[in-house]
Image (tube, rainbow, N blue to C red):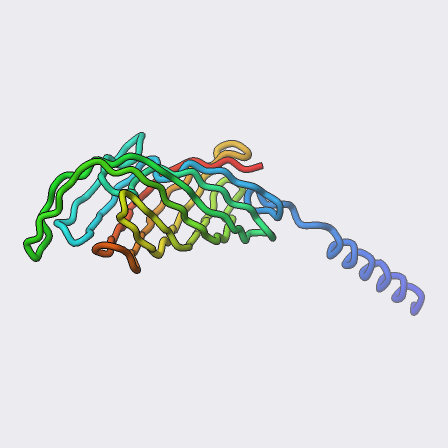
Length: 201
């Protein structure tokens, strides 16, 4: 009887050890070593204010038709240093046509054409709900300089992703850019929803 009990105990321990040693199934996106490249803010609905009268910008199938850098499409890069946790950033540049406007205190600001660029270093964390759907929030700081109009802003993105095929996903979700310091009025940009596409290797 004692031998039978010992044998059953040994079998149970061996089974438990084998189960614990068995690696968990790898998630579809966000594994250590994954490198993602994304086209971001390709479409969306944004509410924007920068001292002059606020406005709503809507873009479908292209960047929102706006005169502000926060609405321009951008190219993103993210690398997963461990499972789920990524570091990366986004860059962009463009030419903007700005119309004349009057600030609330009566100052008239002359518009014109401006060109420039921005950079957005960030960290992110991918949460997988299923093999094709998950949540990928990211946050960091954006620096922009367009025609001498400089600003540092806090940028937060609450992006969801849907991957209809392996290594390709659509990004969608709300975001915000909150100006912290700069050469002019601090900008506030809230994206009700913003869309893009992501591939990873």
